[in-house]
Length: 525
Image (cartoon, rainbow, N blue to C red; front, side, top):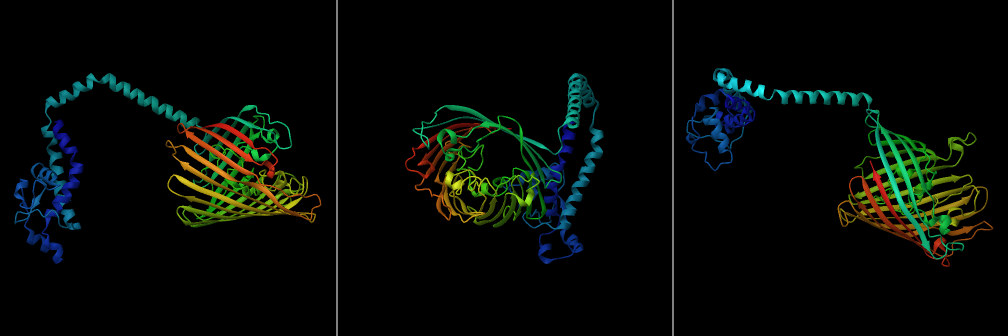
């Protein structure tokens, strides 16, 4: 009985094969060429049933479908041949031929099903009954396990956090230290090594499948090295401290109002480097990219960031041209400033992709700063950040050119150049700031998932100032050199040793070289 039912059940693939072969043999090959009718085909074919595949003169044991045809002819009797003892397996198949072949095979299937019960003997039934009794305990165990799994699945579904929200986590443990001879301004550098951390929990939720609501919580205790070294050029990329208190650092909503249009509304910490392409794909992340603040991306994106804002991007992922516009406001919770009357910035960016391996960007930012006058986003020299001193309202125009070129599948060369024209808002002061950098990244270096990186450039430098009585320019040039090697231990853990070197800190040749080393371990879940 087992053999019989096996033959019946495996007819499903056989039916497909039989349909093809029987249909090919159902009518004469010349019918298609002559474009004859169905009635004419039936008259000229005179199909005869064959009992052995050897009756076909044009079928050889070396043919790729010989065994399938042999099974259909000799085992199932589901194939007919032509009067001249040919099968003609290479000719085209028509819809009529397909229907004829399928009908023949279905008739055979019905015959097998009809006689199936007649071939079942009492011995087979006794064997099935004995097997059922012998494995009764095992079957009961399996039934209990399935019931238990169904109950646990129902319980998890009823108590899950959310059907749409996803939780992502990142934890950074870092051992860092600054060293060198003298710090900027005089005095020895305190060469103590510190152990710090940063933890982020991100909740992403969607309501339509094409939108995203993000909430991010953060706690950290990584102080800056500017007090130890005397310069903010030595800042780390993941630097910042709230004494490990939990803060809300991101609250935004992204949606697509139309095809090829993306809109993002930031209600808290509108960092535009998260909203637009920054053209430094291997090093833009604070947790897995460059170890320094300046090495992550062009400072123009920091100049455009604020506490709240709106960003709109036109152009899909495969579009050769993308346009981005953004508006951000600083501290809009103050009732005397509001969303439009306080510190603010406008950003416009054109992204070009003339070829798959090359990505170009032209960026403009118009910024108004009512008092903090942080022109370069806390990067570069103190004169570049505040050309007119602290507490002076400043308006500035920022121009940036960025590029990323894939030399091959694993190597990317990227870089940027920036120019800033900053003016006193209530005075005659006028200043210019310039900066540049180049990055080289090699993925899968040494082992799959690892990344070797090298970054070199000139941090923001005040190159011109006029109309301001006490203003002075940066006299010399600082250089930023950074090397890192991210080692991916597994999908969740990466270890990145890196070294940052600042030559002529604060664009002053009289200052000693500053070194900052770090061993960053990043956990993701």
